[in-house]
Amino acid sequence: MPEKTPNLRVDAERNRARVLAAAREIFAEQGLQAPMSEVARRAGVGAATMFRRFPTKEDLVTAVFASKMTAYADAVDEALNDPDPWRGFCAYVEKVCEMQAADRGFADVLTVTFPMAKAFEAERNRAGAGFADLIARAKAAGRLRADFVHQDLVMVLMANAGVVSATTEAAQDTWRRLVAYLVQSFAAEAAAPLPDPATPSQMYRALLRLA
Amino acid sequence: MPEKTPNLRVDAERNRARVLAAAREIFAEQGLQAPMSEVARRAGVGAATMFRRFPTKEDLVTAVFASKMTAYADAVDEALNDPDPWRGFCAYVEKVCEMQAADRGFADVLTVTFPMAKAFEAERNRAGAGFADLIARAKAAGRLRADFVHQDLVMVLMANAGVVSATTEAAQDTWRRLVAYLVQSFAAEAAAPLPDPATPSQMYRALLRLA
DNA sequence: AGGCAAGTGGATGTGGTCTTCCATTTGATC
DNA sequence: GATCAAATGGAAGACCACATCCACTTGCCT
Image (cartoon, rainbow over all chains, first blue to last red; front, top):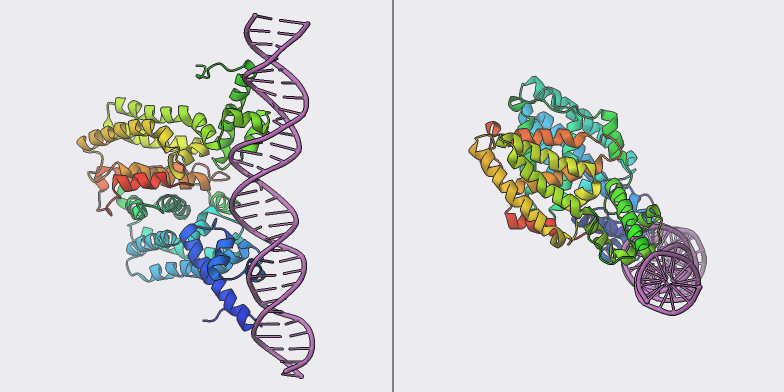
């Protein structure tokens, strides 16, 4: 599917694609703090070319991760299709954490970062709505503990981002163990009391915190 | 207890103390990425004064957190004194995470950062040895799951650092809920299989990763 | 009190980032 | 092919970080 880029000269379109591809690689490897100059270098274009297409770094980041945000929101639909709600729930949590582990930039997008929030708000809300559904079904099936809340997923993403970003050099699979521990504690059987969660709006504000 | 600072003019000693105090505050609030200039400003001294006492930022960080590293290692002794090994174990994990939550800079020191590793290695090892003991006792008491390993604490610290650093603006107590979930999944009762942990040396390398 | 090494703050240097400017080149249209 | 707006790359601007220099001040010792 060729992305919507109206009326662009073919060389410009080609360079735009190169920049996007280079940025995808570099953000995935290094996270969002990777320098723009390195993106331009790997794309084989000058800085001006890159900035003409993506006037700010934020624009580039938004363009790079738009499709991943869609995939992120789609993942919840896939989970909802699982006939076993609990298995769907677990698979979704693992899937999302795996996306973070596979792409440091995406982990940043989901947690650590920016007022790109607005650009991604729609997909985030779509994912949130689906996840609420998933929670309800898993609870109804008696497998998810009753005091689990929507905000707990955000918490998981933050925690996972911490592990992922600390284990880029070594111990890269540690996140799997973290998620396994957490998922086990989300099961209904082991439900000892918990501290109260933050309110959804508090959690939302935490996500908006600027870099 | 006046810190060991040999042969320093009284005004110099006073300024040194001011810099340390300012740095303690600022690192606690903002983490280690806080600019040195702000430390100097809050201390009410010029940049040269600060850099004369602490030639590099790393030196300042080391000086600021030396006592906290000691407290960190002492906490494990306290936990070992608890007659109930499981309660001691849980209290220790919570205590350490609370230290991270109370001081963003300390959270960075324990996870995200630097070759200050060397300066803090002794205390880290002391804490590590005590924690190994704590693990053994809690397992012997049948309360800690058998497949819990030493590296899991490092994992908890990384995860907690992620939550703490994402919730400085809002939802500041979210870490408590994370820790509660994790501790419940560390209990022997709920022990479903887990992915293998990283080796200790892999985890150590992950901790050394430079900024 | 006086001499002087130690201490001081602000200006400056160095290096890194994101972003813009501009002289030149290149693709699309007639 | 000729024309010209679009596109280009590299240099330069603006900013912010850590660290250093230097002319001036200040505590200390006799």
